[in-house]
Image 1 (cartoon, each protein chain N blue to C red):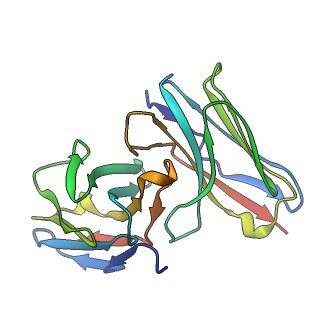
Image 2: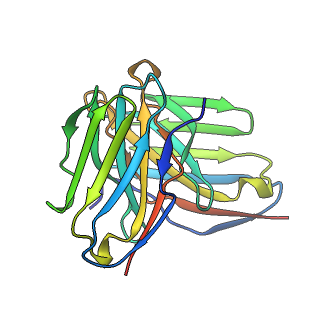
Length: 114
Length: 112
């Protein structure tokens, strides 16, 4: 199994630009999570989906952030417009209900907003 | 106050020593307890998973949960330089459907 796939792995953009992060969960997993990791705040859950439906988006910091999951094998996290404080590593994780609370993380996207 | 507290370290130990890591938490509803290992510039990977109280052992790793004290621990025996990483505790309730609360992570450095 290829594991959780994220793209791009690195993104450098200028303030005000739109940023789209992509995630392909492990095949057969019905939960998908988006996290953000910074030195100051650690690992924070932004939003998660179950069977492609957003369940809890209370961690999404602002309206500038949006996430979609059009099908079981693809999800996007969009930031528009981006700001320097959005610079962080963004992780996608997936799990299936039959494996307890085990979440499998992708390699992350390292975002730098100048 | 955060729901999950974890000392960020760094914790430096010589090769072969026992590494002791811990987290405290405030939410008595937490039932699932996990330890993740994160190497530099990588995603976290699940190391140990425990439901409710008790101990669990897997090779050189032992996880302990003391719900009465709201305290969990991870021990690494015979530590190796390859154990150098950040270790994050995580926990969730039975009705959170996978919504994990993570600790800040403890950086561990095992020196040869």
